[in-house]
Image (cartoon, rainbow, N blue to C red; front, side, top):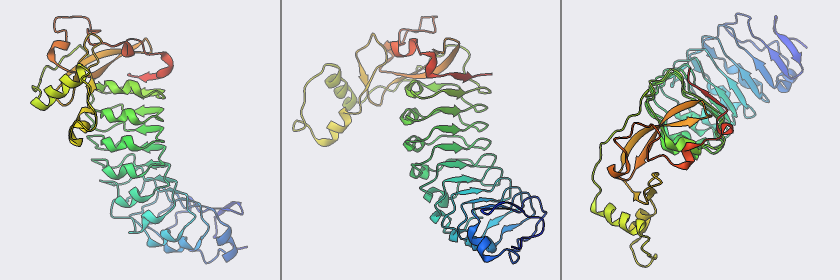
Length: 352
């Protein structure tokens, strides 16, 4: 069996062409049988400017590493690799225009484009419905596309080291997401919808622009690690008393819900029934009120693990639910849910 000079053969299914200073990839010396049997191909640490079309000749390939080259384009031939599960393409010169049009037809489970020049995540990647791990760390991303919610098999999302300013609520529609890495960005707030990430175990938010967290973060029952160091988290108890008076519709809805006035589906139009279902209970244990759109935003500290106090955002039904004169950070608005958070709920809180 002939093999390219310098290539390492770890087994019948593995070909290693890494660190050979290749500028082209000549497979003429690789037998047809060897091409069929190869499942892992290493082309990392070479000098390839584009992924050569000859890679498509490895028809049963499952793993391809093309990291640390000078790649600025990936050829259309990669879409012929119907068995490809893992593509590692770190530290190249790829951007959102480098992928073939049909890239989304691949059956990838792991995709790593970290250390490239992407300013946005290509929409082709949002069609990779079998993806379990997606990494775009160390690029130039400014946003996360709403279509991220299409990747419902995703377990790890790594977007650290970019220019992202906001987390779209669509991220919360990833039912199996366990690891979310958004460190070293420009994120100013965390959407409360993230409470729907019931599988989330690790949330990395260090080195952003966060000044508070939504109180809903307490509902992430499987969260074991929360990294917050390097954020301008508030260092004193702050209340924001901006308050838009409720509309007549909201006042009526509040009355119905807070006084438990009975109603039935045939009593009201469907749009009003849906509106009443949107009522949120005021978290102040001394208040039985509800709110819909009009509320008072309040930042307060909550104990985590008996050691750290984190600023969480609360939404109260009216200014009367606050305690402006209280100097105690644990104000009247604190509920039992937040006053005692078991240590097992967050095993590691990294603040410094």
